[in-house]
Length: 310
Length: 281
Image 1 (cartoon, each protein chain N blue to C red):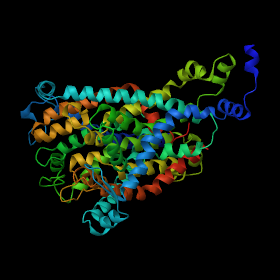
Image 2: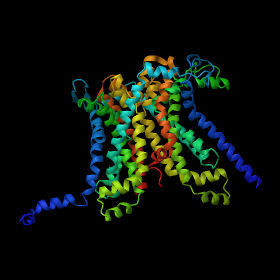
Image 3: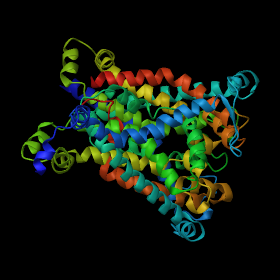
Image 4: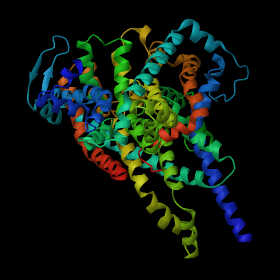
């Protein structure tokens, strides 16, 4: 009896639904839900909400949101004495860090690619800054930069490069450079690892072939190494650009944007507006400007990575 | 032959010279933090910096553990980073599996989002998250910070894990399924053990994010007793000033040691995590 009643066909639509739910085409979505739902809630929503906030005036305490259109952006670009300076700093900072860390990373990875004794030790030493949180790096360097008791001034005096102590972080002329050194220090492991991995995919035969064709050390570097590093190098540059452009931690701890706003970066400007002056909408507008400027590198990077996969 | 040897020698000298220079740059701050944490006050404020303490002392560590909440900060960081790591692993494994094994609509869009997802300006994400978490009464709680860190780790972890899963042959689960396992059973019994190195890399990545993060913690944690180490040390410097470098360096060593231990033993996984998605094979 029971079997019979069960075999009564389901209404058409229900059956189709049940078939669709157990269909192998729908299975992937069950697996994806635990990843996608948090992703939507925690990254998509905040991003959209952040962009929305940039067009509002938002009060953190009575939670009043007033739409004000592009007012924040107009204010930012025409009335804020900090904005253009911070933007310029951000660009100098980013370009400088990317260039220096790429160059140092390239030289280091080439040296590490040689088959020399103690290579593992040197590789470890080159990568070690990665385990140091930016805050700690900033504190350690702050002492190294100290005008009276710092290692840097002592060393430069000893070798005769300077004849009086420099207050690296307190001097308007050197503060931005000093913060850049700390950022390069923190980023170097990344460049080294990426470029070294790239170098190791270069087949030895190519060098031999180039040597037979009469290429010297520089020629081999120019015509074999560099072209083959092109892809990894591009990715390393894009990622370091994005990282440097967004960076906050070490500069906030080292200088907080000073002295005299010479190390004011967009991320610090946005942070101070949001959490010191409680101008949430205005701070979001700074964030949106950063996002717009980053769209190009983010797009290029994403495209490059997807291209490699497919 | 002689020319060959001389050339080779030249290359060695160049390589060693450069590596010595660059490792001095990268390692010196570590050396400095470590040795300074054992220095007595007299050896800290000297015009000629003292490289090795003549009379090493544990006074700084003693002070940090008894007079400051450094131990508490350490446990806070440990708790937050551990829970973040576990959450990230649970949330990413199935999704990465689906991305690696199944064809479905929106696969490409999801990929784009995973790659681009953590490139957005941190401050731009911080503000709305702070507003939302305030509404949910999650500001100043461990849970709030864990949610944020899981968010930060999620996109890249999923992408990284997918890349690793791609290298595990499909036949593995197929044969287990022919032998009567369900797909989930096959994943658990056969697939995951093989994919363990990729999972280890993701765990390290998530742990490192949570252990090192500063900006969100600075904004969200109000009670000193809830500070993680990164905010704790900055707070300590703020109240004590730079006159107590020895104590600060002892605290810094406390923050770095877990990372250093991971680095010594699991360097391979850290590197594979760093280069995931960027270097093929």
